[in-house]
Each structure stands twice: as structure tokens, then as C-alpha cells.
Length: 155
Length: 155
DNA sequence: TATTGTTATACTCTATAACTATA
DNA sequence: TATAGTTATAGAGTATAACAATA
Image (tube, rainbow over all chains, first blue to last red; front, top):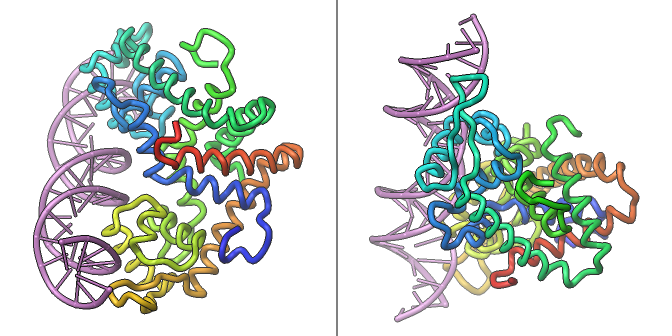
């Protein structure tokens, strides 16, 4: 309960407080840094870009920029860095010669798989403390919450 | 299901993907900007600081820095900005004349109360789509998850 | 005329280093 | 000698603007 709330927290108040701490820059950076530790060419900054590409599949840099919430100039520069690191490949676009398709290289897929295993392991330690039903509920609710929060004008 | 996962997502994989999107800088910035819109002297950058002070109660700037995951020089500068905006007050520390206690002013409390009502409203729209039991479960699990993620060496 | 990708540039946010004053 | 707070400076991360090439 918060010092200034003056009463029992409602579920949404408790969720809001938890979200507030979860969204701290520090929380995100530390988590991403630990997930990418020791992976050549990947760090807390470029991780969301590679992860976004892995999540959605092959796409142009402009599409990727939208996916990860960055300007296309930034997505382009990070894609170049990831390409130079051998984690991403550029291919000719089928129908638009201005654009190029971005895909994960085999190395990139291995890198993402490692970050996922690390995150899975991290979350499993947490989930082991809770009944299986709660884990599935949390997954469903958190996924829906993200969808809700990232949809403009959802409240 | 992710393009490269090759099978049904496990709960931890689904949670990890949701977390990835939730932690995007863009998600955080847009949410904080919408919560602080129109509030004099508060924006997406200073919001976590004022919110952290509200969450924990009166504290020194060094303690506040730890609370919100910033360097104490940054916390000090933001505290000064919030003080100048009339949202925060500095008081003499009881036993250490080097330090000073930070508290919310009445205006600061009103500002935080407004951001909380906005966030509550935003979350209520989401929670209305789910049974009450799920809301409480989400609150408990999300709170525990944040605790887990912010504890160094928890995996 | 609009859009893709890219580069140069500027801005925002945060950390590091150095200092003063007090413990 | 160590720590609180502050300030100056440097760095990381991102956006804006402008360009050439293609739609």
C-alpha cells in the first residue's frame, strides 16, 4: 500500500504500481543487458530490434521500425550494425526495388534462441513459485495487457 | 506463436514476448506522456521520479535515485526541477545536515493522484474485459514478477 | 507526387567526474 | 576517510531533416 493512497489498493492500482516499476528504464536495460551478455554484436540497445524481427518474421526496415517503436532512420542504422555483426541479412524485395527484406541469419537465430532460453529460465524460476494455472493466466493477461497498452486510444 | 519458435508457446515464452513489447522505450514513453499530459512541470521524464517518491514516501535524493534506478546526480537535478515546479518540497534532514528530505507538496500529491486516476481508468477499461478474479491474480502476479525481475541474481 | 532507405545533424536523457560541506 | 548533494562535462540513444532512387 502506498504512503499517500490512504486505503487498500484496488487491483488496478496495484497493477499500475507494478507497471510503474517494470517500465523503469533501468529495469529494461538491466534485463536486456543480462539477456545479451557475451553475445557478439548484440547489446541492450540492439536487442529489441533483433527480437522484434524474430517475433514478426522477415520485414522491411520501415516495417521493423513501426514494430519496435523507433524512427525508420534508427531502425535502418541498427539493422546495418546487426548485418555487419552477421546477425541479420538483407535480401532484395520481391516487388519493390527501393526496399529490402530483413531476415535473421543462422547466427542471428542462434543468438535470439539463447536470449529466449535465458529469459525462459529467468521466468521459470519465478513461475515455479506459482501454480501452473497462474502461469498460463499471467501469460494470457499480460499479452492482452500489452495489446491494450500499445493500442492508441484504448482509453 | 513466433515465426521461429516452431511450436506452441510455453507460458514463459508467451510472457517473455509480452514483456519484450511492454518494455519498449516507446511503450513506456507514450504511457507516461499520456498520464502527465497537461500537468504543469511534469512530463514523461520526470514522472517516474515523482511517482517513485509518492510510492515510497519521504526520502533523500540519494535514496530516491536508488528507488527509481537513476544516478543520484540525475535524481538531484530532477528533484530541483520538480521543486521549482512546486511539486516537491525539500526539508532539513533530522539527523544529517548534509542531506535533505524530499516530500510531495500538496500540488505534487494532486498531480500524482491525477496520473493514478488516469492509469486506473486506462487499466479498468482493460480489466472490464476480464473476470474480477483475473484482475486480482494479474495484480498479484505482476507485482511478484516485478519484484523478481528487479532483484539482482534472482536467476 | 509519394515512399524507401540512408546519412548528417541536433536534441534528449543519463552517467561520470570533480567539488564542497558535513559525518 | 567516507558520504550527501550539486554542478560541469561527456556519452548513449533517438528523432528530425534532407537527399537519391524508385514507385
